[in-house]
Image (cartoon, chains in turn orange, purple):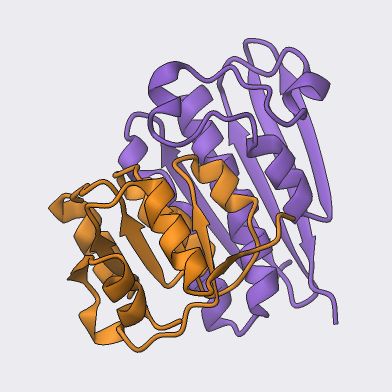
Length: 116
Length: 141
């Protein structure tokens, strides 16, 4: 699934990285616990989170994740956005809650990765 | 002598900066052309260790030795030490306060994750003196 399709499905607003909308994402992970995300191994994944702090971007960076979706309308501050820009990570925000966001992406064929 | 040796001081008072050292190591390994899987194993282990230093020990130091066939990391802090290492290694066991959990860590997955992603993990710890963690990731062909 392309990043732009994720944006469409979740009626999300892209905060930064719009130029990477054509990126392919092969799996998804939804969590507010970053250590759980770090136990997850699939490549080219999208991270959905209700947590908004710089460590969400750093966690995505360590995991080579392409895109972060903040759920429940969460808005990252400028420091978080600039951290993501430097790392070419797409940030978007959706008003949908976590459960609905994950369910809608799953329904469109996106799957979770294996836990190592 | 290793191909490349890196040293980082990890500040203990700024959670927002936790991960800077791991990010820098990642960039170096990428530049050197290491396999993405190897890079991920190294930086996830290092990042969890770096977070632990900030959460539990008021910061510390990281040394990384990069060779073509293995990457070694030494994470040294002068924090309170770990009273029961076997217990700390159990998934879900955590002594992190609620404010750390609110930041997305402290779920008791740090040390187990480090073990998962490394080929060797050794912890030397002394109560009131500090903790040193030795990690090795092999580059498998």
